Length: 97
Length: 97
Image (cartoon, rainbow over all chains, first blue to last red):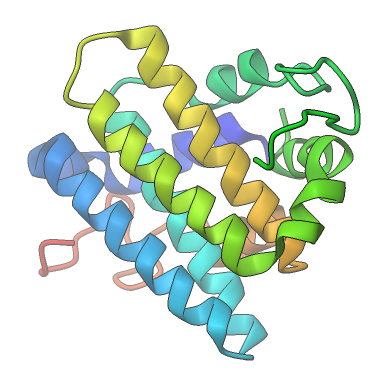
């Protein structure tokens, strides 16, 4: 699935609610889902873990809809098939990130 | 860009480092990027905001690579063009989420 298709799907299903909740409320939900992902990563239920990754991606797309950001454009412009800092693939940056 | 293309690109560029850092260290970076996104959402620099969305997506894909989760499959299986709870588009769930 294309990133923009996923974001559009989230818009069709949830934008009515997302826009009423606003940026702050939607960000809070994203943070909660990231924390749930952190818990799932400590377990060994692969299906639950997959669900938590999907939830974080869904809330990130919801938040992008409320903030009027095109997630596909953002991703493409940021990463041009190489590390934007060292310009290498794989990344050869000296710092640990 | 397809979700799996983006995840594959992150794997080519960063997996060597991501796998050494491990799940806990990569999750910590994701959390830091989410917090930076929260700060950018309070400002009015649209380019910086787009960059922060891209960073969160990139670290989510990195984390999925380390955890051996296919983000595209996760997203597709979770959301079948309707709310998985109320089965409606747009979502008509009674709770506020």
